[in-house]
Image (tube, rainbow, N blue to C red; front, side, top):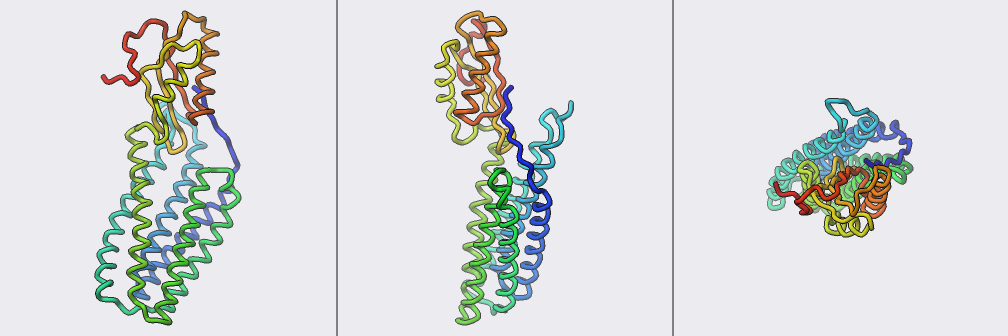
Length: 299
């Protein structure tokens, strides 16, 4: 089995600080939204909350990745982050539909909003998000896990800017309808992001072939190796969003010695990691044994 691990020492203190910072923003915006009667602040709070969970998942993933596998858990705890992401996204989708219902009511019956309180709370959220962006910027260049959290914070900042602009329009022009409109816009964004998270996590849990991986292309590439006659019984799946696993049977052209087989397997492993990004491989080598040479075993 081949493994491709690149370790970068991530500043976990910064991540913990950003998690607490985002939870603080969430609480502040929920309270601010309730007191200011602003749905857009509450929807932005949900946006921050979802990203707080995303960053927390990133942190947990870093911690769990350092834990060794056991006899009972041979894959360790890698799927924990996938389960958490699925739960988080599913709950958000349900909440967003409740916000949509209230937003559509307010479109036709606008409520008076404390625009000054709305503006102050949104600015606090914006400043806090910008601080988080700077704290994670360095590690985001070296760690894909942290990069995803970093991008979440950037979208949070843009969302806060939209709410600030909305509060200005309400204060100076009394355009109260802008609040439910912003709620719907932010909600649609969260809904789309949540949908993709649910889709990807379900695909991972169902052990589907990862998006962008073409099994036929892999078959052709491996069978182009002179010593390989046929590739069959292929399975490709993801353990997490980063770990792609491959297993398959190869029928070799001759009855090679064990040392020669090891060289063939090494060639296949290097091809899979360099060309397809597959970092875990299990290969069963055969010579004229298996009569079923179908690429996917159907039973």
